[in-house]
Image (cartoon, rainbow, N blue to C red; front, side, top):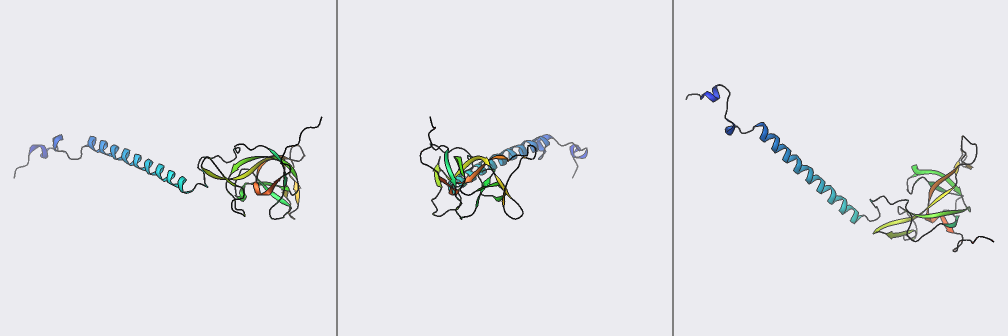
Length: 190
């Protein structure tokens, strides 16, 4: 069987090449595009299904935003466990890592209701409500002097190291730890 000159000298016509470089690149690009679109569609569908099945976990990041038709009022700090202090967190969160300080029990403060995660409570509906199709917990934004615990567990005021005075911070408190001081805000005296 004679060998054709195109095979003998390494020259194969393009029509007979099965894996030409150009075809390979085009096919690989089309496959990568298809896989990228499929993965994006799957991820989007998964997130939508998760949101529908877990309405208590909003993925829209509304924590810390004000609650519709609720305004700042005067409250008294009243720990549910009957303790001497309540936790103040840097953001509406159930994590102990977010605790920035403490408030003493029976303090009068002004607080603004905000959206936050649902927290464990009894009864279960206490502090839980819906807004925009998601379940939230009542949290309160406060700006006040916060305390820290010393080695013995006593509350001592947080001090500003530069100024040497008590430090004021903005933080968040669970709604079950506050009681309304008065249903009507106080009117200014004449």
